[in-house]
Image 1 (cartoon, rainbow, N blue to C red):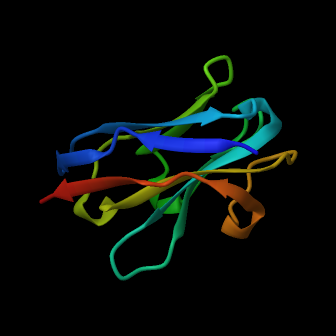
Image 2: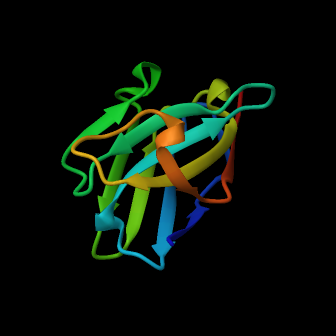
Length: 125
């Protein structure tokens, strides 16, 4: 139904910032809850951030609160992940995901039915 394409990843030094984008097509993002997940080498996919349909309610992994921020521009059909004060342990492939509309943000990956291809974020020490 909805196609998602992440962009904005790359190589950054520890302490730096990146802004990831997730562009949607096929459906308007206002029909979906959105989430960001990541998978580091040798680790399972983990929750990063999520929001509701309007972006007015957000949720973050505890370790990322204060450093990462999810936002959306439904008019542009795009969701963003601002990443600040990056650490080497943030190195991972970052995925955006769209899920069935819920009242509030959702952490569980299985609740998301549509995923982007991922974008690599590498943080050097």
